Length: 503
Ligand code: NAD
Figure 1 (cartoon, rainbow, N blue to C red):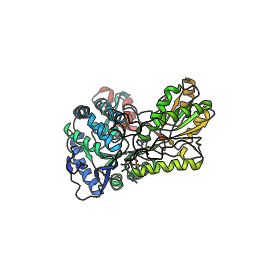
Figure 2 (figure 1 turned 60 degrees about the horizontal axis):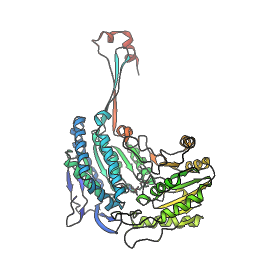
Figure 3 (figure 1 turned 60 degrees about the vertical axis):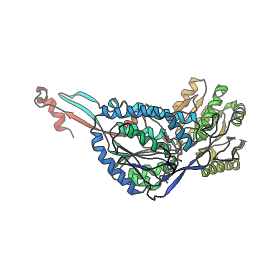
Figure 4 (figure 1 turned 30 degrees about the vertical axis):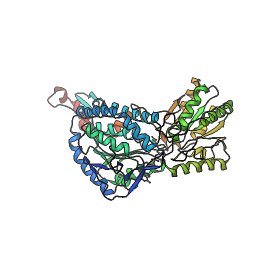
């Protein structure tokens, strides 16, 4: 995306054409590190969605009929171009989201890994066969794309989250419409340009920018077959219920409140930096961030002292500055919300061990690292998603109590445990209600070949994103039963019976 005299231009991509904003309302895109406006997101209407769907439907017919190996070839080119533009995409992530270069590079890399996974579509799309399911009769299944599908994505991973679904959906032969976060649309625009360069036919990938109206336009559109959503829990619930009520297949990945359980035998010198990175990396704006530390047995005093020292020494600064460890949150209004949670925690009786409410830098949307101790399950700071650089410590006596605390949460995205005790890990794994588990790993990261497996209120739907679940989500099967009447085996009574009497 080349900056013009108007700045970075965010436009809709419909039928292969980049459209002018044409007087539509807009939402400013900020650089969270400076507070400056760097672009304007057009707020698309239902009509925009409808036009995009019509163009996508036209494109779908020939794209679905394109042999899967040829579709995969476009993905191979896309992957090469993503590598070529890796640093540019990394810097766009930092510009629009605020995270540091290492985090931004990690995000782009994880996204590219899904493209690599989807390059295997000729294998992933294979159906199954079973010969002689009855005498002389064979059974097989064939996998088909759905049609026009859509994705609605959040601000916190503007490159990776669209890539969780786009390569899989497109590789499977669907036409895909992306509605990126209105707060971070720049990576999506750049990826649209790169996909065209990779040779993707016009209309197979579209971008409809915007907010609520565009989302509801997608959910209610009769010709969109499936919707993948990633974002906060209340919106996920709305997307799931509203999308399903309009006959769509929906997967909605939602918010989180992830615990990190620290056992008395944990290797603290190594666990503490890992915990710090989980809680404060990307300013705590990760759905897999460890947000509550559950200290088991006598480990709490030592652990809190170490965490305070490590957090207090973090360098707060812009993502593009080398050495910055705590980067800004996404918006001023979000910083206010995070600060108000710290106020609330104090009122609820938590001990503010480290207070980051005061803005450490004049410009941008910065907060300092905040550590709350003696948080309980009854406190809202212990239960609700804060999505900022705030870590709450809960003190318990046993692993059983730690599991009880974790399972008391309505969310079930992730949980980590720090210990060298395999039996404790097994006990925890068998009982804990979370879909992504980390053993001595503070961010149980989603990898391309596995599903992102949130449970409870962290996920609405059946088939998760990425891995084989992702392929199943964007495809459907036909199951065929076959016999050949000229085959002598097909003439026998044994053969005819199951077919003729079967329901
Ligand atoms: P959000 O819910 O505010 O926005 C997500 C998308 O929904 C955006 O595209 C936005 O335009 C749209 N949207 C927002 N409000 C809407 C409304 N009222 N009606 C219809 N559409 C609406 O989420 P966010 O703040 O961009 O992202 C942060 C949230 O996403 C956190 O809760 C985080 O935990 C969650 N998240 C979850 C995962 C996961 O895999 N489970 C991954 C990343 C982020």
